[in-house]
Amino acid sequence: MERHDVHPGHEHHQPSRPEHTGGSEQTGQGDHTGHPGQAGHADHAGHHPGHAGHAGHAGHTGHASASWAMAAQATLHCLTGCAIGEILGMAIGTALAWHNVPTMILAIVLAFVFGYSLTMRGVLRAGLDVPTALRVALAADTVSIAVMELADNGTILVFPGAMDATLSDALFWLSLALSFVVAFAVTTPVNRWMIGRGKGHAVVHQYH
Image 1: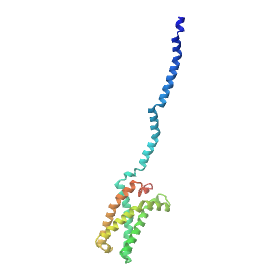
Image 2 (image 1 turned 180 degrees about the horizontal axis):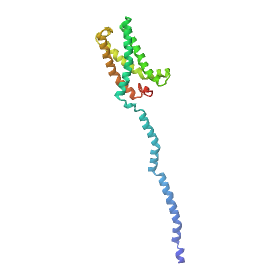
Image 3 (image 1 turned 180 degrees about the vertical axis):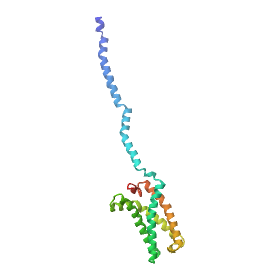
Image 4 (image 1 turned 45 degrees about the vertical axis):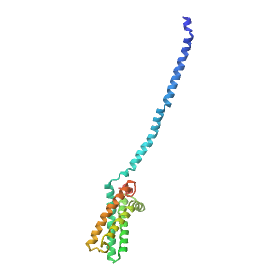
């Protein structure tokens, strides 16, 4: 019995268990902490806010899915101001017996004036001051009105006899109506493209 108690193997086995146990625990902890999969998961978790931010950014630039209805509404808004300005300019030019070129220039200038004015009226109601409202109108309408004016005046120029027609001629109103239809058809895709990129009338939407 005494020889059994002092058995060398037994004595060696007793201290080795704590060492093995301690080493196993440390190794296990180290393996768990430094596990590549766990680190990758932590990396993924660390990147998750970035992905969330990216998703939020995509939502913010969701203008890219601008609908045709939205583009058509923006175009109709510009067309209303342009029509008022053009008809007024042509009426003034005709009343003053101006030639075609100065009459057309006046009509284009007034088209821009009334186009910008309609937009400014809306954003002024939202509480903006006049200088800021003007900047918003310039950013929102300049390209749209410019494309519209090129389209409708180009149509009038190529329409036979339209340039020589007066306000009392049916040809004048027929050519003018056709020019507005052409301008609307040409400008709507341009507005949709711009709204989809956060430009044009997209800058006005936050004030509605």
